[in-house]
Every structure is written in C-alpha cells, then in structure tokens.
Image 1 (spheres, rainbow, N blue to C red):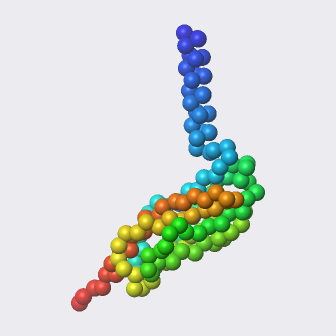
Image 2 (tube, rainbow, N blue to C red):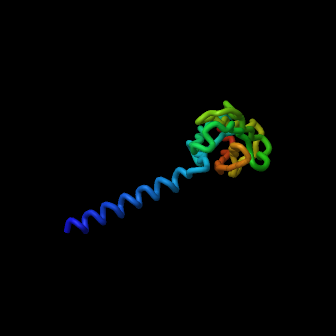
Image 3 (tube, rainbow, N blue to C red):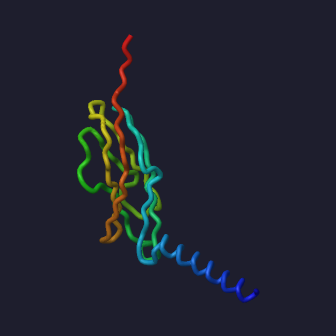
Length: 133
C-alpha cells in the first residue's frame, strides 16, 4: 500500500512539473491580455492590460508593442509604455464618433529580440443609440 501511495505521489508531482514547464517555457515569453474581448461605443475609449511573462533568456530584452495587420477605420490603439523593459503595458483602444458598427479582431503584437507574438482582441463596436422623443 505504501509503495502504491509513493508511486501515485511521484506521478502527480511529475504531472504538476510538466504542466508548469508548458505554461512558462524556458527560452520564451508569454503575452496575456486582461480581456479577450470588449465593446466600444462610437466616441468611447477603453483600456486593456498587456502582460509579459519572460523566461530568463528574455529577462533583459526590450519589448516593442504594436499591431499585426491594419486597424479598422475609426479605431486607434496606443500603448503606455510602448517600448522598454516592463512587465505590463496599458493599451488604450478608441473608437471615433463615425466608426462603423461591427465586430473586429485586432491583433496586439509584442516583440522581444527577434521573436514576435500576437494576441487577438475581439472588439465589438456597438451602434450609437439615439433616443427618439
């Protein structure tokens, strides 16, 4: 019985270690967004936090944040900070007053050294509701 318990404990321990290694690669970095989707009204701005988890290999590398592909007309994205050695940045998405309603996939990119990764942010622009009296 003791041997079975010991083997089970070792197997579970090995599984936890294996899962941890896949979540935080040894020679890579991971990018996470605080939100995977958001809704904007015309003329409105919202923020999303971009977090970077670095391996030891990328610990001193400068991050450059940007976009993959083009933005839909009427939507802008700014980062604070946009470049440097930081753990998180605030991406501000703004919709112009004349932006067309719809759902858009915007790819926020992070580059460290020569490696670039993108995270998809689903942005829904709601139609501007005008009340009629």
